[in-house]
Figure 1 (spheres, rainbow, N blue to C red):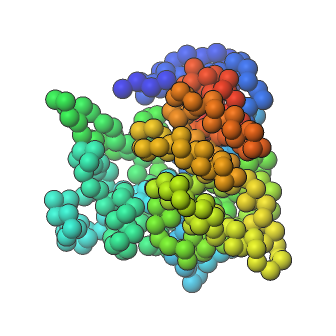
Figure 2: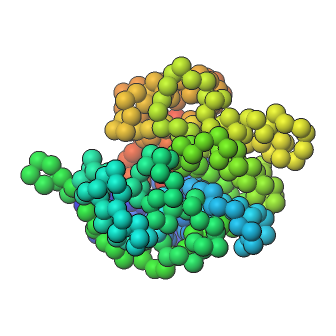
Figure 3: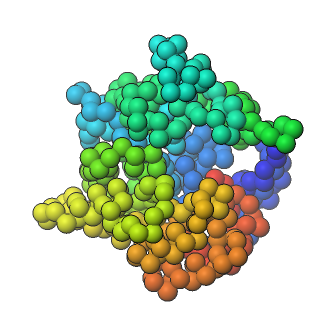
Length: 378
């Protein structure tokens, strides 16, 4: 299926085709005051969450922030990173290598025996099928399973492991449908190559080099691994930001638990809670860094398709004093403008994701969003 994306080609208007996708430069379309967040780097031109993608995003004048996703590796007695023995890495999924160990594959997963033969690059056989390579709930209840999960390995063990650059697509069949591998050697943008997971500290250095905001998503499955994990991850994040000297330019974004519960205080959510606890500790450099990051913390809001009450969740988060990062479908739906208005009345920020279409971009900016996350350039 063709998708419209926006790519910059110098200052010229260029229309072409890349991997069957329309390519349009929108640098002359105005809205120069909007803050653009490059989603996983310039991921329409370079493989997502890699140094190449981050650096390409950094070189764009239109970029305000560079977004990434992070996971915590196991403690490494002989650390590769000079900053930490428990280094954070950048990846969109907990198993970005899309592989399982042969022994695990042959043994199968006993709770779902029909899913016992996964190989690198396989997709779910259907939208409702259970896939232990991607399902965070499975990882939470069966630690150690799922092949080369980042959080089960030291950085030294995974630093040279090749990322899976393929992608899956959904194909409707006779009123139903299934996910299937569209490609094993290039993604939806036609990008291929040999890539590895970068250190979070290297990502921060790139943000600092190009003077860009570090927009750091703590992936939702991290929240399922408990308060101790959350505290360790947050301390590592702060330590890296302090060591690189980029504390003042870090924005943390997270769903912080996938299930919306209006009876909960957001301060009880794993990562916000961990950050707040650190900020209330004895005065030191880490406490000071935590205080600064609390003020810019953003609560991610699910789309209408993934969540029963996204608008209610947005109002709840704003009412609790949290900046929000709202899926575009929620803001483009009836009442979306009122969410933005409510946030601004409370002196809070609204970011929206992930916007790769010119018309949607224009609509969202007219509604009043403060920031736009995109894979492309405008």
